[in-house]
Length: 143
Length: 119
Image 1: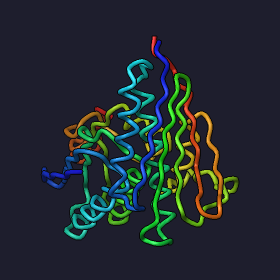
Image 2: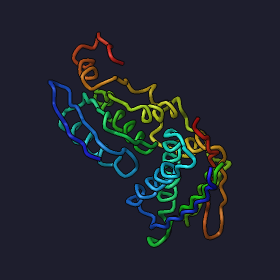
Image 3: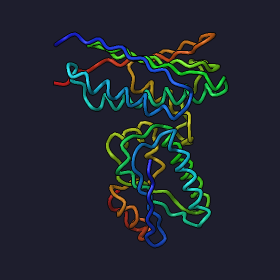
Image 4: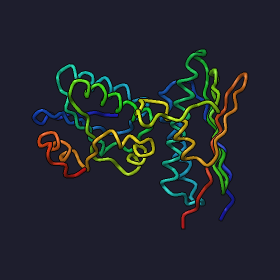
């Protein structure tokens, strides 16, 4: 197998109209690196995690300036896909985010739960200028 | 996301196409609110042509369900693709919706409540 090393960064204004661009990019990345022969379910999971993370970043950063940016970086190697989603919002306490109350079927609050369920490693760093959610997915090679 | 509708007796079928996410969630909720104001509270949401959902999109379905159930109606789901069904199950929303293989069976479930074929 040829070595794989791809880095892709997308910067966009905190506006939901850019969501399709960045989720589409995540899917394209998984589907076009032929050397890795990734499963379609992995591309589905990555697209979902990116959608959840970016929706959170756009919504929760909405109280800052209209010109605030969201930055999404993809780093792909043969063995792992690392995605960093950074925003300029107030941030949150990652450790204190509650599990969804599944028995009550709330309308929201599932995003972080979904990300943690489908990605292999999730970290959050709250910074003075940017907050960054880092999601890692180990790449399973088909057959 | 596109939404087309068809009225079959007392049932309104919403045929959706595209992506149900935070971008399209509002238009779905607005549409269902309009139906509810018009007395159309027996709704089938045909998702056979929905190829992506996220939790914001599914949250809008929960909001629609709650608004029509308050009025004595229901929202029933039909035609889930596997990847979409997986997200329903991931956040346990398959437990509050009646889900059918296709829109026809979902419509029949309103017309003949004693039948539950095609769930």
